[in-house]
Amino acid sequence: MAGGWWLAAALWLVAGGWWLTPATFAQQPDRARTEALARRATDRLQALQREADRLASEERTLLGDLRKLEIDRQIKAEEFARVDGEVTSVQADLAEATRQMTALEQSEQAERPEVRGRFVEMYKLGQARYLRLLLSTPDLARIGQASRTVAVLAKLDRDRVANYQRTLAALKTSRAALEDREKRLVAIRAAAQKAAAALDRAAQARANLVRDIDRQRDLNAQLAGELQAAQQKLQLELRDLANGVPIADPASLPLRPFRGDLEWPVAGSVQRRFNRGSEARGLEIATADGAEARAVHGGVVAFAGAFAGYGNLVILEHSPQTYSLYGDLLEVDVKKGDRVEREQVVGTAGPTPSGTTGLYFELRIDGQPVDPLQWLRKR
Figure (cartoon, rainbow, N blue to C red):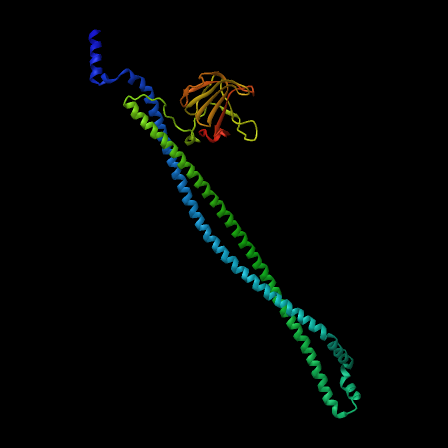
């Protein structure tokens, strides 16, 4: 046995374990924690970079769509201007045709009594008009002249009436054609206007999406910056730990960059959702008896104990004005001031106001309750 002990000691020395001091052994948990946080920060940074790439791709697609829509809008604008000009021209022609018809009808009405009188006189003469004309003319030399005059006047009246009827018929036909064309052009103009309005709405919707993406990209860059700063502190902490320097204030990761990527505090189904306009400021999650409630993110216990309206409550502070709350606990496994790591058990689910076993979970960002479902990982 003694020989075996010396052999083990020799192997340990050869392996280099001779330099491990008690202080080094004490730093091993800190080093493992720091390395785990650094890996998590790296993984999340990569996820944020993928999200940034996706947003950039979506924005390029939307900008391409906007350029196409702008071209379509210009085409529709030109089409509308052309059709609108045609409508204006047709309406002017229609107004002129109507004016001519009105003038013709007014002229016809003014001349109607005179023409009608001559037609009546000619009708009275009838088939014996030459005999009556002969008998009514004292000067026989003027009979021929009078007869020719009557014939000429009659022909003029007939021609005038026929010309009036032809002109009126032509104007009516022209006006009907113009009215039909006006209707078609007005319909085309309305369709072009409707299409232009649809293009405007589509362009505005895409422009709004571009603005939203820009805001998301700005937020993404901000969160990545926060995470990179935390990662740098973790790297410095790892260097100090490697050099045997004790860590008085261990580095931590900010909560904001992990929106949508937080683990659920307990396994179960949502019984009551977040409602900003009511007292439901968090989630009520139904779960099995004895289910463990776990921290969604690393932090420090700001409160642990009974609290009116929340039962047994644990509040973790992740950064100034950023908290997660775990209520309706049957048992509390942490105390105020404890540093809690992600997925560390903080208590056990207990009875909820609805009568089932569950957990009340709430998130507060900048001191204000937010919908936890927007921060927890999709499942």
